[in-house]
Length: 333
Image (cartoon, rainbow, N blue to C red; front, side, top):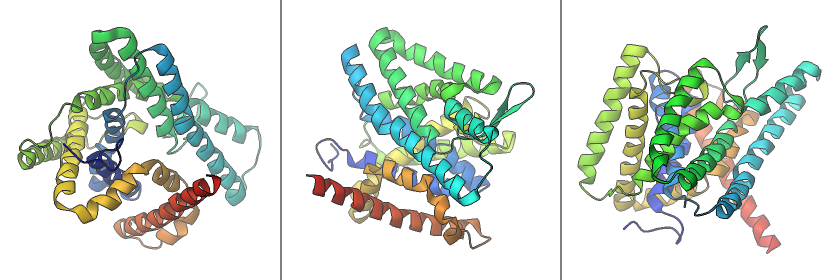
């Protein structure tokens, strides 16, 4: 059995989330094949990891209680982050605060999309919500997954698979409010996380790591060569579907298997990574607002150099943020 940081936490899951959140910052800083490799699995990984330790509800009362708690943990921070982004845009860019500006912000909230798009005829621009969109989709997807498991029993597995496929089809035709088409796609990843609980990472770990890494790399390269694209859920981009889903699952397994090996052989690395993973929500908040210090990491024409500096600065702000929250809690108690 894997030792846990606390009775409720599992080290390898926190390590995997720690690796993933660093990759999120890196993926938002680089382009080309490196970006494609990261995007091919980093968001599915968070959906999958969120279901590994999630206890499904046994009745509607428990589901309601969990949904309320998740709303305050995920949706409220998303709304606060969005409000801060709007506030800083007003302060820094000083846009014209006319009806079109506020209509755009309203549409951003309604559709909660990670990417901008156009609707209607004549076309109306829907600005992207930005990173907070993921928190809203995670809330709706996990709540819906829990509800389907509670109400459908054994039938919830095929229903989740069908709804996930439907989400891909719908997303190619139109983008739904609250990114609900992506919510449907995410049901498939949550289902994989539900199955992954039974996986024994201690059986032939090195062979498993080599195998899943090979599957991830081959499927990624093949998709890139044939389609010239990579999976990006915010853009509703699922190239060579369902091969891109296989790439996402293999990439998640690769990081998971690597994290299990890491906690066994590199104890000096696992602690900071596990800490980062445990507080990945805080790191995501910091990364959402790191446009405020963009000048500090946008000094070079080499994207990898800028990405490395950006990661370091975000980590420094993250540590200050977590410590500040800790001090506030201690004073309150």
